[in-house]
Image 1 (cartoon, rainbow, N blue to C red):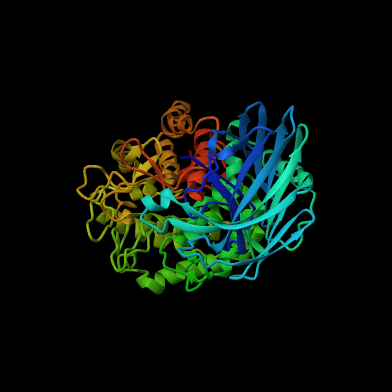
Image 2 (cartoon, rainbow, N blue to C red):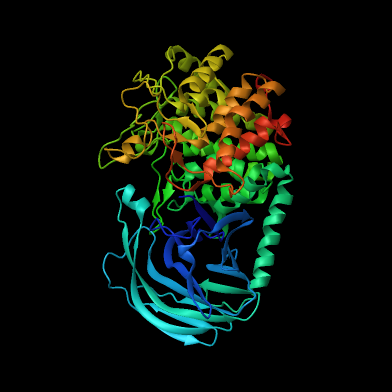
Length: 621
């Protein structure tokens, strides 16, 4: 069943299915971020809505609702001549969810709202009925104090009466059951709000863990609507991009005094690699340049031994550095930012950081990351984007010299050379890049996924030899790679992570095996459409016919599946075999970002404003 999400710019969110049901432990109407953008807790799992006439009681969950998305998700019911429309939104920068109810009725009715309360980290479930609360009823609502955390849940509904219930509500999460995760969760119905409606009316129900909820919800609604429309105006793109532009906003979150990017909803926090791959689509094509700079600056603060963090653990914000590509992506993303802004002051600010990345990779750093005698980058297993680990087992170890790491290494050296020359600095990078190029081409006599181990598993990673700004292979090989990837890996939702003719291929993410084995062994990833589309059009010199073909064949089929109710979210992954069942996170930053970036930059051919300043002749189109 399809799912919706709204977010608050802190990492907190509200999310349920289109029918307003809970099918995951991550679902809920108030998931607060206690240490933005991490430490997310489920406080309100759902609201059960009913209404009563003189003759009958109607439970909304027994009736089909009509889902729609127009800046916010809404749910419409038409039951016995009573029309109810619910619209869900969050106050930006606050752990507050507001539900707007619009009621059309010609007869008096009583509306009943039963909040389902919880208090747990969103990774967990309450397996036992140990959860206890204290609560205090006020004039327009209730304050609930869970005893397992120092937070107060506030529920406000004006002109209503509250009736205590205090009984357990057991929820069963079918998606988690399918994923072989904990799926039974004990919640509490603390009581019900009753509100009499004599004629058509509109009102707001507020859920919050903020200290002060003395707010005008209508003003918050109008302010949030205005903010979203301003994001659309700021992007200044044709209206066909609007839903994706709005979706990008879900991922940009506050972190300390700066900004970061949530990798995906529901369960990811901010990851270095995901942030950097997503950055152009989320912040540059949408013209959120200050956000881009804050994100780049924020990650530079965590640079250690030339490494950008891989992830910040949600429960305690522990920093892990186990990535070989994030730092190389960082250099590329500084470059993309400069191509949009020509911000030379920021280049001066960040120069020592990006220079230290190159030096650390040359001289060696953590996780056996080092430049070998052949000038290529070697690394330990599990450090590329195909990084899944099951206990001590790596399904896709890709250790030593993964192909895209060499592509990123060469690209980073050429960027550094270019920036050094443009800013009047010493340039030791070009000569090294030529040695890398020569060494790589001597060894790359087949389409290897890992160079020195001669791994010929046909995977999408070779596409980065073509898609990055600086390519170290000739045009003949670029065309071969693009054509082979299109033939073997392309689906309507992205690229498969392994060719179906490989014996290790898994066409379904969920099967009679650990799902993590399939994660990078056939599963489709939408974000890979971005570099594929760029590579496809790059080798064709971005001619109009090819750009039209790319839209009609690589993006349009996916958009047609999503239909007009789509909110701009794109799943993390899909099954490798038809019918390509959506899996993983319901909305992934790099899925949304790379689809939008490729559509804008490559297919619509709207390049960065200052691209010509930073181009070298060999990559002119």
